[in-house]
Structure formats: C-alpha cells, structure tokens
Length: 447
View 1 (cartoon, rainbow, N blue to C red):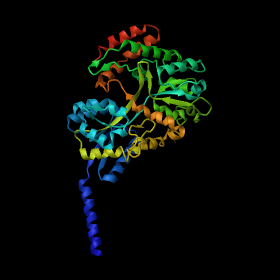
View 2: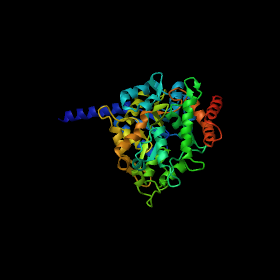
View 3: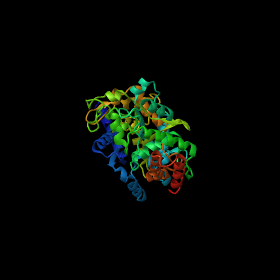
View 4: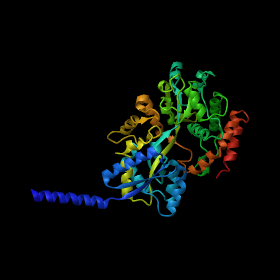
C-alpha cells in the first residue's frame, strides 16, 4: 500500500511538472482599459490559468492608440497574441497580414458558426474566411413610447411608413414631439443616425470599386423621410443630449439612440434621470418604452440595423495554440464573464451552444446593469424586448464593410459632407435632386 501511494504521488508530480513545462504566457491587448473592466478581464485570465495552466498577460490599450501601436508592433515583429478590437480594423488587418485569418476562421468553425449572429460574421468575411472572431456588439435603436403607440393603434416603427404614420398621429408640440432628430452637423451623432437611415433604405456611397454615386430615387426617399423627422422635432441644433432629455421628459414619441440608454431609462443612473415624473429612480418610463433595431425604407423592405461589433483577433505573431484556446474559452465557459464587462453595450453575438441555442442570451439578460443602482435587463424589460435588443445583430451592417471599402466609407462619414447637405435640404435651402447632385459631386473627390 505504501509503495502504491508513493507511485501515485510520483505520477501526480510528473503530471504537474508536465503541465508546468507546457504552460505558456500569451499577451492580450484590450481596449476595455477602465479599472473595473480591466479587473474583470484579469479575473477571466486567472480562470483560464486555473483551467489550462497558461498565463494571460492582460495589457490595456487606449482605443485611440490601438491602430498606431498595432502597426508599430507588426513592423517590429512583436504583435501580442490576441487583440480585442473594433470592426474597423478587421479587413485592413487581414489584408496587411496582422491577423491570422485562417486561425480565427478555424476558431469560429470550432465554436459552430451557426451559433453566431449572421451580421457579425458577414462583416468579417475575407477571402471566404472569417477574419476575426465576433465577441460582442450593440445596435442603434429606435426608442419609442409603446404605450402611446398602443393607445393610438399604431404599428411598431419598423419602416419609414410606420414611423411617418406615428408622427402624423402623435406629433402635438410642445407637449409631444413626433421625433427628435439629429440636426447638429458637426456632431458624430448626426453622422451615425444618418448612416442608419440611409442603410435602412439600401443606400450606400461605396461599392467594391470605391465611391459609388448615390442613386437619385432611393436617396430622395431618404432625404424626404429625414426632413419629416426633422420637421417633427424641436427647433435648434439637436444631438444625443436633446433627444435623450426630451424623451426622458415624456415629450418625444420616438428617438434614435444607442442601448446605453437602457439603464438610464430605468432610473439606474443619477447623472441622467428620467424626468417623466417626480421620482428620478422610477422605472415607469422603461415600462412604457419599446425598441426597434431594424427598420426599412420603400427601396429596402428588409431593412438594416446599424451596429458596432467588437472582435478577438489572433495575430500572425501569436502562440497560435494557446491564443486559440484562450479565445475559445472566452467565447464559451468564460463568455458570460466577457459580456459582464459592460452588459448594457455588449450584446451577445454568440447566442448559445448547439445543444442550448439561447444559453448566452439568457445569461446576458440576467447580468446587472446600471451605475448608481443595478438590476438585470430581464427585470426591467419583457422577454420580447430582450429578443428585439439582440436581434439587430442578425442584420447588422455598416457602409463599406461588405464591399471592402470601410476606410473610404469612414473618410466620407468623417468629412461631414452628407450632414451639411442634408441639413441644407432640411432647412429648405436646396431641392432634393440638388442635394443628391451636390452630395455626389463632393463625395466623389474623397479618396
């Protein structure tokens, strides 16, 4: 018996030595650098270490510095093993050789591509492979007073037509404005909202060859629709602040906003309280609110959702085996922890497992959100609304992604040409056809 115990102890010791000998350290760059978020990622790295013996060095990088730091590290042959990054880098980094495209695509296949939101997968396609692993994202939303819609017998705002009908029925200023549109030209918020409205009608200024002239008929439909939104809004230079304030005061039937409004709607953030009643912590407004992530125009009935997606990218300098293992862990056993970093803005792009298709959506809905008070979204919003919140990732889109022209599309957006000309049309300074011609003329010179 004593010899058996000695033998068993020796075998265990040899096993531990083997694990130790095979243990590696990988470097993980993350743009989630805020202290609380960083602590959660370090805890995940510790869990991965316990499971595998491998160490993950979590290295925070400011999002504004990520592009230049990655380029410099690539030139020096010193890329980290895994990078958490935004959509804008997926295709450029795949083309330049920064990302190990084959490995990332293999990870998606190993996890089962069918468990991911199609939109997040389609936006990362490169030479028939998925160039980076979709992690999380959020979709822009039409936030609307469902109680007022129901009382008036209105359909949900899922199209230009239903939004216009709701404006006709509910616009009654100053007590209730039909919409609060973005009209401040130099605010990125207007660019973001306009891109969503253009996408909804299937209009884009780029194709696979670069700039693509805006088609007149469908673009005029966009312009006329947006003018109706603006004419049904309060006067002034409007952006995210006014739209939130008006909606929170109960004076707007609809706004377009990001999901970061969801905890504020429920009275969980003191810096942005609902003012619809005398209790800034009340969830009354949340209970009266509905959301739509995908809406369409007359030239694109299927509609579109504007989405911001984040990815894990295993790089070409990586310890491929360990980096792949870490990404798979972060997207399976550790996925709920991954989403918990900021659940109000990290929708699960991986819905579940083949054996449990809704596993991660359900787990995400139970994660607490809020700043000054916390509660899970599943306690604040009905299951149907939770499903709507994540369903936008099915049709997620952005200008230039599928066409491989994201860089040009970004330059077009950042030029604010579209904002300025749309504003001129809204202000009745030019006709719709002149606005289309003017946009095409000015956008064609951007390269």
